Length: 432
Image (cartoon, rainbow, N blue to C red; front, side):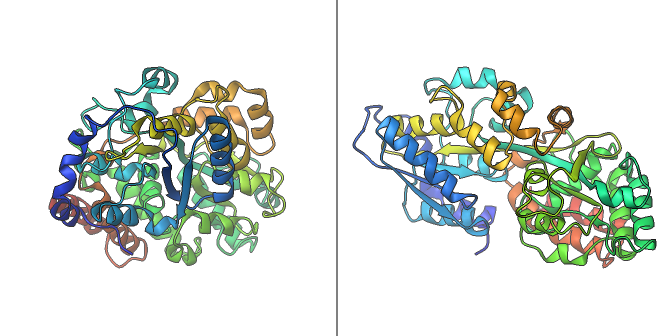
């Protein structure tokens, strides 16, 4: 199933334009006996069921949870909304949040109890990412935050006589070239060039930022064709692909999860992916040959800047049980239970980061992270995370999907770097 493009969604969703206004007059009366529906993409659904059951027992809820496949999740939610189905509380990837708000699918949260306290507890960058394009409305509360990191195979580097991981991209290419020449690794570098909204394009932005390049200007227009750092990024990608330093299989993978599992085998020296994947790579011996702690994190090369985003829980603008829906949302993305219950579970079980700094003062969290990552280094890398505003544009989701084919074509050498970067800029202009 393909994501519904912006024009189709706008054309078919005229009726949805009244949702947000209607939500302002919904009854605030509690409906303790009314079931709440909750949907999210499939990621550890048994964990989600466990804390939903905890919520139902402790808070007298009647939450019905439905997980959906990642690739089909957002298109399915949109299709169901057009058909009149109401899912009270939903996951929403950051790329879709503004669009869902503008089309009346979700409501802002600023008028709901406890919101101001949650805002104060979040880091400013993450809070900004959760707001509407004009900065006036909070559209979601955090499910998790993540950023791209550099992960390296310490035993492999040591075998090659490399004592310190690469600090620059040139150095990383040199290391990979040596590893291939010495037959220590056939394809030493494993980038996240797979399909989907959290793979190739965030990797591209991270590498551009680390080269000191901007991807968007102040008006959120694509300017990579004007940025030397963006050209350096793509020239490096082309070179590494052409010289066989990268396993071409990554271009056919459908998700970041598929790519990071390749690193489990220990056949690669360097890997770039979401920060939370280091937990399974470096902390789960039952899955990875690089656990415990044989895979390590290093600061991102170059400037150290990397792309950061915050995915969220959102409330349906047409919910008929707003109090109960918000209560569940505060439990999921806030601190309703008083001990950061859900955030703490995700930190402990999956290594998912969150925008609440006080979480990382909890002894249980510190002890858990210590088994797979240098927490101080991870927190330092987080300060280098850059939040963009372009994903709040109505054209962004469509751009993100279509830009992938252009970037993959550049990588494979099907188009020159200058021409490919101009295609990305032209694509954005055609959608704006």
